[in-house]
Image 1: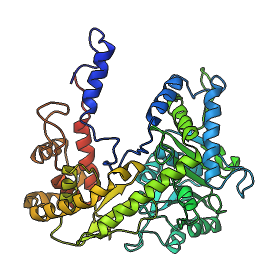
Image 2: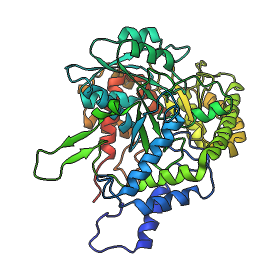
Image 3: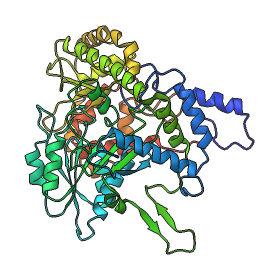
Image 4: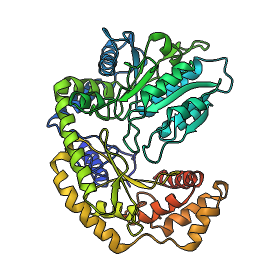
Length: 493
């Protein structure tokens, strides 16, 4: 690894060549073979447009909208577009919807929780009710903001919470009820109408996490898909989050947090004047914000338009159906749920077929999937986030899946050493030291100094690692990954 701060400056073309060399080790962000993390519409020229728009506003600072009215105008336009798509705005039952542009879904969810908490200052021990399938960012928000997180189990059959259980979990200290449209892990839409109603009956705010699907579900509905109500058309929904860097295909990171009216949004703001400097007034967590991502999102929406998004959704829907058909055609695999949006998630009831080995075999064939650990009554699974770019190569997935399943069966399930299984079952997080994790990483082929050419920190095959993580209870799994991430994040000199 070269120095970031050399004694003498390096020519621009050399720096760019170095960056290209670093990027060569990454998963492919285009081409439709990475089923997580990135959202590729495969629209010619869109990347170039977004990069140009980003460059135009990269040094604009969102800290002061009076100094940079261009950014304020773009933010308001993005909020208006999201509001109109999600049942708000003039002529609707939610005409006063307001919102803010954030850096991503996690910031939007943290702010939604912060706003609900601060709206009830008389509650000294606030609580947040959410399904167990809700995004982990809600747990992060509760941790950061000092709320108790009350998780409601989901059915192993429907993968959804029962609204009766949500109602039972609400207490006098509950400040927010959350639900998903859809959940990230399995792509199913929670019973938002019923959950919003029980929240309203209890006098509690209801946030719909539509970060993942909020931009695509309205277009699926226009295509005739049976999308249940989940937005501001439901009176009990008080706030919604939707990520523009997902199915709006804007570069990362841009999300929108919407509130039904300005009164509900008011506690979101932070202001502070009791110091010698400028009075700080922030609608979001960050103070200084680059205008680059916002300008790129604005350009993306303007360029694609509603017609463009409708066609991209149609393409994605076709790919989802073909991928689901490919899974159904393989003995030993089953869909976790019939796809409701843009996720195909599958598992296996065949003891001779190790899903983590299967994920590795798909990687060998150029398909980068997202293995998910078992949770409560839910089995381990493989998650595929589907985008329009998948359509060009989706016909190749079925034969590759068949071949990968055959190879995984031939290899057999991962067998971890008995002492490792015992450790995973008996160790407490407090007993898991950095040195122990470092030794374990070496045993699993993940040793060496990160960035060293002869010792890559991540192995080509992850089945053993994933099996260990799947064996460990969640608190131990968290500590394992925390310590491993700490190993990766070391300065280079």
